[in-house]
Image 1 (tube, rainbow, N blue to C red):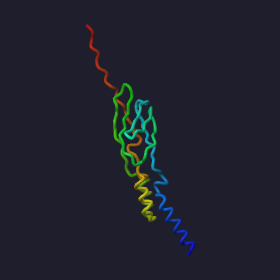
Image 2 (image 1 turned 90 degrees about the vertical axis):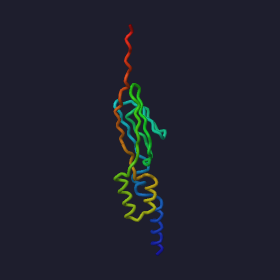
Image 3 (image 1 turned 45 degrees about the vertical axis):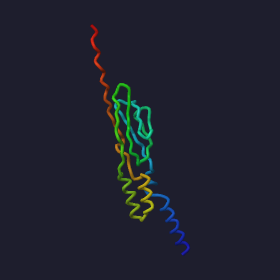
Image 4 (image 1 turned 180 degrees about the horizontal axis):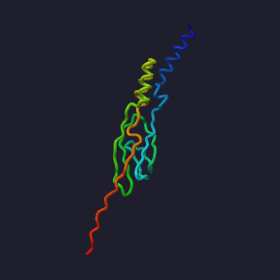
Length: 138
């Protein structure tokens, strides 16, 4: 009887401490930015940045943010990154439901561990800035 209580307590403690996706996937994702041409600077609305593409930025999986890409001689590009439930995150949530880990499911849901950033990788073809025509001198 004492052994049964100990096993039950250990199981409850383990379930309370974590969710499946939080353990297997983590709460951060590597956000990759590639540009054509390379060497553009990237800044997110959350303040994360990189000086030259291609680059990778570690971001919380549950983030939603705007991305601004700049390079001298090219038009500034701005876009939005969101998140969605990933296949791996959905499978981890299903594991929580099947095993009865309501606390684990709550942890996974609130931590964002079952989500992926989209688009990821972000691939952008930059457009050249148009140079104004020079007036002929008479």
